[in-house]
Amino acid sequence: MKFAFFGIGGVGGFFAGLLAKAGFDVTFVARGKTLEALRQSGLRVESTLGNFSLPQVTATGNPAEVRGLDAVFVTVKAWQVPEAAQQIRPMVGPQTMVIPLQNGVDAYDQLAAVLGAERVLGGLCHVIAFVTGPGSVKHMGLHPAVTIGEWDNTKSARVTQLVECFTQAGFKARVPDNMQVALWEKFLFLATLGAVGSVARCPAGVMRSVPETKALMQQAMREIADLARAHGIPLPDNAVDKTWKMIENIPGESTNSLQRDIMAGRPSELSALSGAVVRLAQAKGIRCPLHEFVYGALLPGEMRARGQLDSSQWPAIG
Image (cartoon, rainbow, N blue to C red):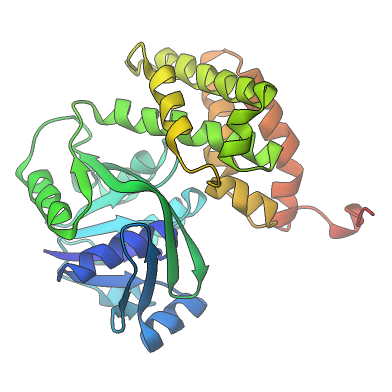
């Protein structure tokens, strides 16, 4: 199969690298210093599964020149998906699948609105990976896994074929009984770590060891689980307990991508995580107090990172 990854950050670089390492035809769609580094020296991956380098990769900054694809993986940040959907259009042929691997619960709808529902699959991934420099990625936690499925939860040959490719590349792949449940189960995990980690500004091991902060995480999970059920998502009764066990088992030094971006003063996925919780709760007329607080507290910094606040209104402290 012939693949392209649109957006070469931690997730895109890592999974594209694994597929290319396994011998698959993979095009890296990138820009700026990342594109330059990929063209000059390829991709370098530091991983708990073993480090590897790909001295030569196929990389482009022009999506329109990439054709004949079996699948496009969308691995930009969640807030970039609407723009990415437009840029991906020339890459998508009659048989091309588009698989979002974003955080949050909005990417499928955003892509389907532009590209057509018949071309878009449900998708998510579990991995802790981030960029350490242009063309360099570090995988530091969670065994890499991808969950994919038809949005209507039917079984299909194209999904089966993708799963076989992923298995050959050495990472886990599964087709869930219910794609929406799988998406919200990840959201439960990620939005919790993102919300509390971004406010507490400490790694997972510290958050779960301080009773008061642990209680905040558990409240964040309960709010999301109640919200999912209010939207008709049949989360299992043990969803919160299952998610807490996952949080207990990730490396203590782990941080969330939302937290890292906020602490670095970069535009973040705040609107796709706690912001989405607040928005979806308002749609159902319910309250999610912890996420309302997190979103409101972090929004000024997010607006500053996006140039939406005058810097003169934000003097240096100390």
